[in-house]
Every structure is written in structure tokens, then in C-alpha cells.
Amino acid sequence: MLKRRASVVSVTLILLAALLASRAFSATVTLTAVADTELSAQSPDGNTGTSPTMVSGTQGPNVGSPVNRAVMRFDLSSIPANVTITSVTLGVTVVRIPAGPADSNFRLHRSLTDWTESGATWLYTGIENWGEPGGLPDSNFVSTASASVFVTGAGGYTFASTTGLVADVQQWVGTPTANFGWFLVSEREDLSKTARHFGTHEGAGAPVLTVGYTVPVLPQITNSARVGGEFQFQFNAEAGHAYVVESRAILQSGNWNPFTNFPAGGASTVTVKDALGAGPKFYRLGRQ
Image (cartoon, rainbow, N blue to C red):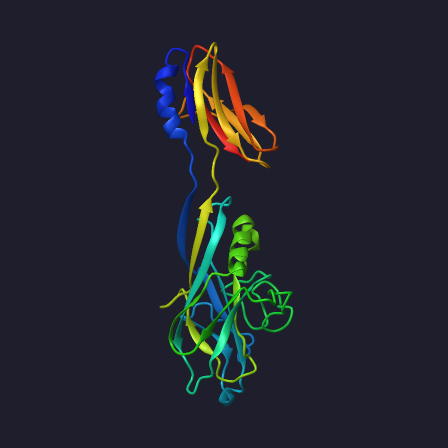
């Protein structure tokens, strides 16, 4: 933000130049699942949305080797929409294993269909039927896995950051209405006793998502000065971005009024000029 007053321009310039220097910064946020549940072929109409665990994988032959899948979703609203996602990891905890377990890779698949924690079952999303029981690949979830991790005994496991996970979260941050979370699926659903009980947000060992991101570099205002009867400042415009300059008379209150704008073009140094008046005026610069 920039202030000019005809009589005190020279006093305020140095302070404003320091105040307005914009810089990129990185941040990390850790989120616990807000919804998670299992889809079980053993109980096709049963919902376990309030359970402290959820099962994914295939159970043993004593119960007919039914297949289970899990779904989970995270609230990403704390992440600004204009950031660049740089890393995504997802931690899960196995809290129970079968006797004589079979080990397998577990995969995360981006869900293409909305579902509800209190209504999802093997047959039903909580809103409508799945494309097929347990979810139809490339209709209810993307058939290509976003990440995988090999699961053996009880304990914590981390899906390492991949381009797939980063792309999933980037899409959801930009389009929150598309955030339907992930399916958690065993790679060996054909193999008995790959089933694992994973912790949910209702109990211990809830799924935890860690997202790293960078905030885009904002334009840096430079060379602010009084030149004759005008107040001037400059900024470096990046190629492909439009810019808007707004102003108001009181810093703490009032509407920001459009002063001028610059359409997207090539990289350049832009000079903004305004005639000096009797009262103070504050400016702000935005990149679109």
C-alpha cells in the first residue's frame, strides 16, 4: 500500500518502499481427515461412518473373502486458492491386522464422485448408487493411483509426495466443489487377508494430510517519488498477468476505488502517475 500527500511525500517514501516490498514465501499445513468410512461387500447396505476404524482390503475365507474399500476427505479451505502446491504426503495408521495376514500395496485413487460419511456403503454413495458396487473405476474414482505404499503390520504408513497427489490437491484447492477425497484400495483384492483396519478421525490414528505450498510472488513497488506536480511509482509486471491499481483517502476504512489497470502483456517496468492533491491518498496494487 502506498500513501502520498503533497506536503509530506519525501517523508513517507522510504518507509513505504520498505513496507511494500513483496516476497514469495512457503508454508506447510497439516490436516486431519474430516470424513472417512469403509465400503464393505460383507455388509453391502451397512454404513460405518462413526466407527473409530475403517477396513480396506480383502478379508479371510472364514467370512467369504469379502472385499473392502475406504474413502477419506480433507477440508482444504485453509489453503489460499492462488497458491502453488509443492508437496503432499498422507499418513495412515494400521490399528488391527488379521491372523496370518497377507501383505500388499495400498493405493490412493482420486474420487470422481461425491459421497457422505454417514451414508456411504458398498452399494450407495450416500447420494446415489455407485457405478458398480464398491465404486466403478474411471467413473467413481480415477483408475490410475495417485500414490501407493506397501503395508505389512500394525503402525503408521506414509504415502510419499507424488506428482499425482500434488495434482489432486492443486485441483481441489482451485475447485473446492471437486474435492471428493480419495479411495484407499488394496492392490491385491484377489488375495485373502490383505484387509487392514485403519484409524479414522473418530478414533486414534486418523488419516493426516500434510501439504506444502508457495504463495505467488507479488509485484514489488519501487521508485516512488514526487515528480513535479505528480506522485509516481513503478512495479515490474510479469508476462501473462494483468494488474490493477486502486486507491482511497483513508487507510483504515472506505472503499478501494479503481485508479487504473494494465492488461496482460509481456514483462515490463510499469510507471503509475497521479496528480498531487490537497489530501492524503493510499494506493494498493494487485496482480490478476
